Every structure is written in C-alpha cells, then in structure tokens.
Image 1 (cartoon, rainbow, N blue to C red):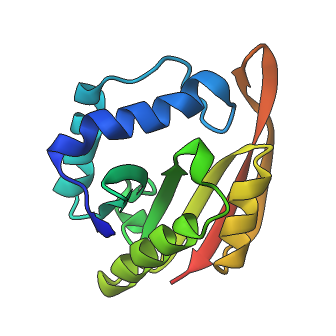
Image 2: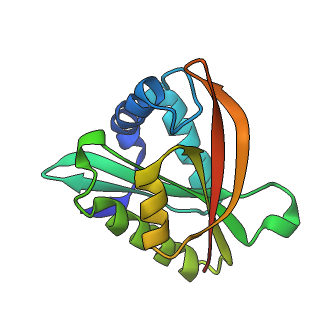
Length: 161
C-alpha cells in the first residue's frame, strides 16, 4: 500500500534511513537521525505542499519517497529534488518503482517541470532505478563528500516531467 506519510511514521522512517546512514555511503549523513528530526523534515516537506509518501507491506513500513525544493531561489520553483529509500532487504521486488511512479505522478499533477535525483556514488541499484524510470544522468561531481574515511562522488539524474 502506498499512502501519504504522517507524523506517526517518523520513528519507522528514521529506523529505515539510519541503516543507510550507519552502513552505507549512499547518504552523506554520518550520524543517525531521531524520529523528531524526521518529523521536522516531514513537516517542512508538507509545508511546501510537496509529497512525502510511504510504502507498507504486510503492515510494515518498507519504503518512502519525497520531494524537496531543488534550491531556494525563486527561478528554481518548478524543479524538485527527489529522494527514495527502501528497507535494505526489500530491493529488487518492484517497490522502488512503485513508490517513484506515485511520487512522479503527484509531482506532474502539481505542475512541476523537472525532477532531480542526487545520488551518493557508487550506487548501482539507485542509478538503475532512476534510469529505468526515464531519468538521465546529467552530472557527476568527484570527491565532494567524505564518509567512512574515503572521498565520495555525487551523481545527478534528471527527468523532465
């Protein structure tokens, strides 16, 4: 089931996300987040009238996706940055595509022009998902993040909505 995120999802979202914070370089955050921090982020997204959705499977929250303003300057108002995370053991089952399809549809309905995925690299699974959905790799920044004692790259994928 795909549905809008609500404040009571914050703890489950934090738990899901913190796996990636603590065990991977796909996010450049280095400290686990609290449910309160997730709640604040969720509120900020919703304040901008942007979607934050979650996926449930057999009553368990197994993924989420949302959009944030790409940048604060007004000329960017038609572009958003997209984010998606699945529980680490739910990859390859189609949930990511399903979540992203719902998110992209909502963004199109709201009249956005461009969606931008920003990926910590390497991240083959997320890159493949973005490309499967029609995103195109449009940029690559080398060694701009430092996590787990290594310099990390960032890639940019873009879709015109």
